[in-house]
Length: 160
Length: 160
DNA sequence: TATTGTTATACTCTATAACTATA
DNA sequence: TATAGTTATAGAGTATAACAATA
Image (cartoon, rainbow over all chains, first blue to last red; front, side, top):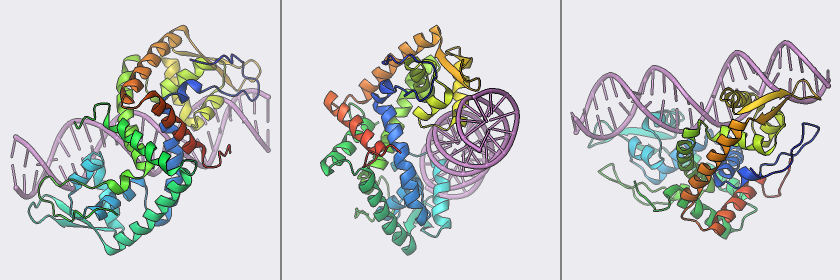
């Protein structure tokens, strides 16, 4: 919706994407894709991907919670969470005990191995962020996260 | 990796996700998901989704380019681009003429209908962004996009 | 040989309906 | 009846290999 550049195909025509680049949504997608590729590479040595890393972090920080509580905290649908938990369990990183007061629910906790793996992975993720956000100052990084959070929460800070 | 909160399951335990929230990557994912849901809703009346909207925008701004040029500009793999172009073509929003100088390639252009649909959809997307980024000032919005771009480009601004 | 567009394929992420066992 | 976890399924998004037509 911006550019002149009415050319035919001839050679190395540079594509004008200025219209799209103005949209935070488009830029978020582009940036996140780059970030995710790098993050996945960094997590691979630990047998983790983004979602299993996030889940394991929450379990270590909040031992004993149920799957539905964790799924809700991650804004995930519970059916999609089942495979994640299975994967962490299969790798011996977490245990699933039946909750004492509600025999439908599990209480998820990290194993010693899980805690150790997470500690290492956590450092790797921090290194990954330090590298990928290396062009930003610490203040800018905080401002970025804060602004993104406002986008997530919405204009009125709706809780619903 | 932060919190105390070693509770059992009992009732409405609030989950501590402070560790994850410090990561720009996690926050980007959460924010983008919210944004995408709203954007899809806004684009539905026009029969577009995020990727077809983006593609149509590029075609209107850069008439006559080939699929591979556009796919590269959007950082997409060409096989995944085929369906996008088919979809826009099926809806009568673009035409695919064989390029005059290279009979392997197509020269993609928007139809009159395509241009009109995009103009309306473009306004809708702008309204969507104005709403979703409503908690940010115009300066903040620009800063957000600029910082995200730096993340995409990388610390050294690598072009490769 | 290399490139454009294509098919086929596979893996991830996301969303919904419906089931089971407990409550 | 409602909830926790599960299964099955379907739709997007993303990635690679391999092919035909053309360069």
